[in-house]
Structure formats: structure tokens, C-alpha cells
Image (cartoon, rainbow, N blue to C red):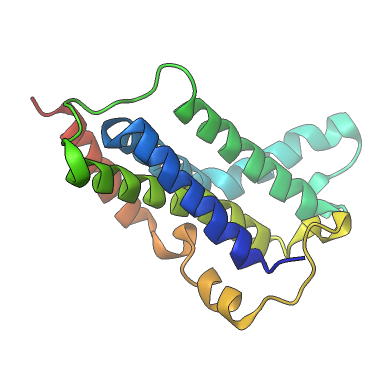
Length: 182
């Protein structure tokens, strides 16, 4: 079994190829949606999880957040929401920035770089929730602790840890202004 950072790097590089194929005008739209999703999870995730627990608890006859498997349940809810947003951002009619990608190597490099940024945002957020909920996928033998020294260092730089609420709002605002400018 490979270390977790191997999978993270491999998937992030795959998003670089996706960025090259789609072009940066379309990838910037995905970046915007990913930043909004991260902001929603950071700002409203805990209150919504408590509300969900209070509303579903009486119906199910059990408080979700009080169960031994609550880490797994919370991980699945957070990542399920996030993956649904990722799917929606890439599928069908997507948020696309105006203009044509620059021709030649420059446009390709910008597209690859934007794809790598999206890979960092997506894979980093998924890893963040794995770490936050103590790697609940261990039960399925998809991951075996301990983390390598490199992985322990990388965890410090995952998007939800690095991007605070103010920074996310600023980045979303900048991308929105770029999208609506004539």
C-alpha cells in the first residue's frame, strides 16, 4: 500500500491533465465553485451537521453525532456534499469565463496550472476531512496509519487549513469580478 501523499500527488497531477484538456476559461469556473464549496463547508458545516443531527435524531431514534461511527458518518456527509459539488462543477453546463485561451505553450501552461490548482483544492479538501475525522476509511483497509513525515507536513497546507474565511471571500470576489468584466 502506497503512502497517502502518493495518491494525493497522482490525483492532483491528473487534474493538471484535465485542465490542459478543458482550458483555463472553464477551469477558472471550477476554481470559483470549489472555493465557494470550501467556504460553505467551513462556515456552515458544523451548524448544519448539528441541525441535521437534531432533525434526523428523533426520526431515526438515534443521535448521529453520538454514535461510535460518528467520524465516519460526518466524513461521508462532508465529502458527499463536496463531491456532489465537484461533479456539478465539471458536468454539463459549467461556469465558464469569457474569452479564448491563449494560443500555444502559454495557454497550455496556464490551463495546466489552473488544473493543478483545482486538483489541490479538490484532493486537498478531501484529505482535510480524512484527517479531521481521523481517517475513518481505515476500517475498509483503504489507508493504514501512521502518516509519513512528508504527509504530516503536507496536512498543514491543505486548503481548508490555509484558506480562512476572509481569504476565501476575497478570492471568490476577485474571480467573480474577472468573470463579469466586459
